Image 1 (cartoon, rainbow, N blue to C red):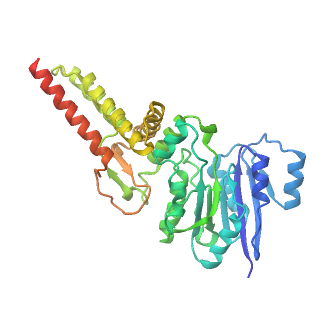
Image 2: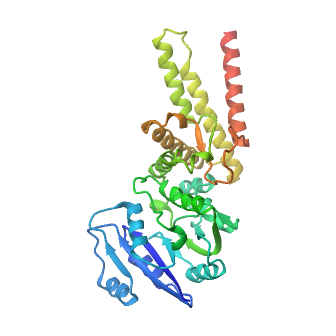
Image 3: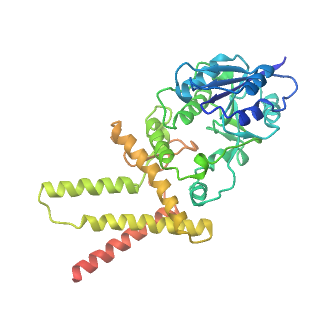
Length: 371
């Protein structure tokens, strides 16, 4: 029996050069492969050459009448086809030539698996902003297929789903901040009681976002995206209490200061406490930067600190703005390795930061008392 595979590519940009490379990938024998290009851009215009190419290759080209967003567009692409397997690809990735063949080989070996996760690489970092994303671990998870045999949430830039095992499950359209991929793939994994098999030979390369510029908005939205899903029934069991982030600590200091003014409490130098917190954050990121990069670089230290705190600020804003106050100072273990993770888990960076804060507070107290 011939296997069938639908390749679904939602796209707003419609980069014809990149998309053409995907459509011209070598096809594995014994597989009926159809491409579905869903343009989430009603005003899109394609060149005559590209139009001729996709027509000759039998690419199903759909243009949304209104902008639907990635979740609805992906759902549309999934529902448009009827292949046994669904390959979801981002529209800006550059695939290795053997991508389809590597996935096809795994399908034949594991026909009842819920799906497969490939490898999404990024180019080598070329400036402090991109290097900070590497050192902060932002681009580590898409490489997971190189190191583990199975994973609960592979990257959606390069993932195959078993249509039969997927059933009625689809992306949740209301999730628009970056958590929709995690929620959808993990829900499919939980409800099938199975993980996705890694395919280390199925490799795509993703470009650096915005040509390597600082990712303020993206990191904030990532944190916001986690706050969108952390309370969901199949996910909240992987959340845990943790030490306050810098954003959470800052908010707490402000609230306590306002409360102390309201009740005419003794005047505490809250600005000094705040400066200790910020100093601890900077000191810890300096140590991390030197330890991981093997050199001292102020721009790298700044971008590592900035990206990390934008993510944490996004999470805090999401929790507060949605009224999920019980998830203040909570974290989500996105590896989903163990349900009910231990709270207040320490690592060397937390120990360094806490030690700095304690020592600074003691020195401040002693200095104040002696003056």
